[in-house]
Length: 387
Image (cartoon, rainbow, N blue to C red; front, side, top):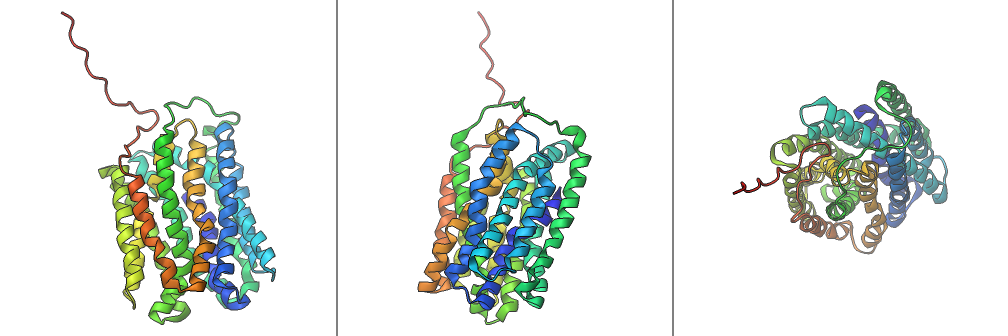
């Protein structure tokens, strides 16, 4: 499941990694390049809750290999058509594939993590790590393929999708005995929509920061360090690779200190790190890109398990929102950031990203650790002895 997740999430990272090539080869403005990110994010944001609701009712393991292929086919086709409309349509198809994959995959991964022992947070951390490794490899893959052969070589980017489809099909067969077709019933616990909505609000803030950094850090670091395209690619790799390490660390920290506490600390770190990225110049900016990555990714898998435990009767919906809707909704703001960069500078466009994790931290105030489904709640107070 983790390796399949890596193959699928390559295509989330690939869209941002393709932005500099669209700017260089097709003379896209910053706003036009941001619209490419918006296309994938908007479609995923709209469709993902639908897939989450469907997987709450029926087991759909076949979605895993099919969605992996769709995610790859869209990105592979994005460099073929010369018109912006065809590019937007291609990345939108990829967004649908990503949206279809995550709810069912997150449900299956959580079940495997809970069965495996050693802490469900750590197990889900490994699953999320796979996705973040895919993000980290995306700029390297795009640089190797598109950087060498130009946008016309983008069909070669479909290879990870084929590998991911095979892995997902193998995982589906391995868990076939544990997955029952038909309506999913028997959920325990009650849904805490208030806490879930507050968590989702914090996730939206995190999403905007992450999408903004993903879209503009390669260009920004190239500008601030004078290192050219190599510096931009390195910066994007640092942003994603640091996240891969942070995700696994987040699971272990949560097993020791609690999920809510670790999520709060992470949002505080993100405020300080993004402010430093804006203020610092030279090679040192890469250090603060890495710290930003840690702040954004340490709570990544914890968002998912918290959301699932806040909505124990709607695990698919919770998975779809925490992995998709609230994560990809940041793409809706990307064109506004691009327009601001066109009108002023990239540095000015990154300034609003400092305030957003602070807002997310405020939304998390007072949030309590939910009791995972199937575990006993707090023990009732003893009744007074009868006279």
